Amino acid sequence: MTSLNHVHAIGRTELRRQWRALQENPTQLIGFLFAGIFFVPMALAGLVGAFFFGHSIASGSLESPRSWGRLVLVYAWVFAAGFGGYRAYSTALRPDRLDGMLTTVSHREFLGGLVYSELLLWGIPTVVYSALASIAFAAGSRSLWAIPFSFGALVLALSTALAAGQLVALVVRNAGVRSKLLSRLRTVVFILIGLVYLAVIFTQNFAAVLDPLLWALEPTPVGWYGDLALLGTASDVSVGRAAGAVVSSAVVLAVAAFVLPRLAELLWYADGVHVEHEVESTAGSSATGQSRLAAILPRSAVGVVWTDWKRAKRAPITLSFVLYPLIFLINPILTVVRTGAVGSSFPLWIALCSAWIAGVLFSLNALGNEGAVLPTTLLSREPGRAVVLGHAFAGAALVAPIAVPATFVLSLLSPQSIGTTLSLTLGTVVLVASAGLIASGIGASIPKFEAVNVSRSTRAVVPSVVAFGVFSLVLSVVAVPLLAGHSALVGGWIASLLGTSHALVAAASTVVTVAIALPASALSARHAVRTVESYHFD
Image 1 (spheres, helix red, strand yellow):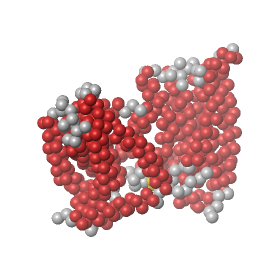
Image 2 (cartoon, helix red, strand yellow; image 1 turned 180 degrees about the vertical axis):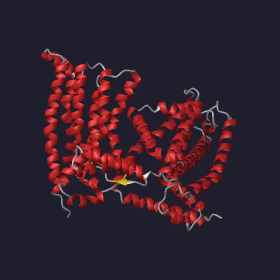
Image 3 (cartoon, rainbow, N blue to C red; image 1 turned 135 degrees about the vertical axis):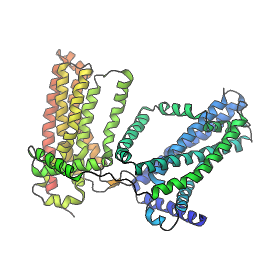
Image 4 (spheres, rainbow, N blue to C red; image 1 turned 90 degrees about the horizontal axis):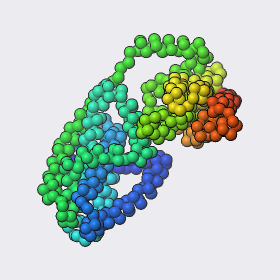
């Protein structure tokens, strides 16, 4: 039998734990404060919108209020389901000291406490805001009946949405701990979801995601909440659908109360799958790969390169900061998809972002990347040369096989001529090869050793924000001649001004970028080597 006292105690403890964790992370606390400041005007705008929505219904100036009511409730349901599912997957269903808690209380009590803490944290503000929105809507429509019906519709919609989100989160997590394939593809799926999310935010094309959901959910009981909310204010609502919304909500909540504990039991007591690797074949391929690298790199640098690659393969989420340069490719890619043609500027974006990624991948925090083995690294022979050269080669060797052919092929598909295509490809090779060396000196001057949370269960040492910004600025300065000379607008204008061909201007711009990149990378790498070799612990 579930003890309500245990549920209450677990919920309160979980709230205190989350608050302490937030206090220990000032950056996250500041982020929440800024998010709160951002949402305050949105919340006030929602109340104002509720008032004028009710006023337009009362005055008869709004056509088909039922469609608008369904639109609002469906969007609110989708948002609450997404938020609840994300919270359940990333935080609520992954509590600390899970094994210890399950030895003292049942999984039902523990799940009840976690849900109770979520309701206290998010449910109370949501209920208060729903009440204020209902009062504003009733004031606008000049109908007291609007308060209980709209408030009830909002509470039921949000409750069922949170339950649905948690059900989906539990199903996904159960599938993840039982499927080797899903375990291997989890990081890839998260990266794709992150790119889609960034694309939607960057392009502001929310309709591409929300319109199909509205079309699918409007005929279902989710859309019937709109009828329930407008009872007593609009004449075109259906009383039967409003009653169906209440009955279906009761069924969903009852099913959730029955299914959620069982899914939590399956998840928390599962052993989970383990992805096994063939040690012999891996060791053999590792030795072969290192021997090939030793033909072109010092033995000490080969170890750094191989370590970087193995870390990236084992935990690619620790390199999530590489997504920031990819944000700048979203709009050019969407332009190519929308127009069906490769513009002359698209290969330039590929060249710049490729060099950007090659620099930040491993070299921008050469000292911090060593982690616990930093003392051993510093005691080795010529540690600076090995660390700087190894990190730079590791990033360039991963990016160049993709960036250089992509730049060449896309330039051929664009209006670029053969001459500008060849010079741009050569410039891309130089940028990608020198980016890591340029980043090494900047990262060595502004190292970062503290680990940060890159996911709920993963901490990693990432480059400093200041170092990231400085490197981005320096790389942009180095790449400006190459990009300007190959631009149809700037390069073409310079060619017409000088009375020469665009291919010649492009070739000259490549020479200028090479003349800047080579000494800049040499000076930066020299500074990084000296910084690493002279580093000492306080």
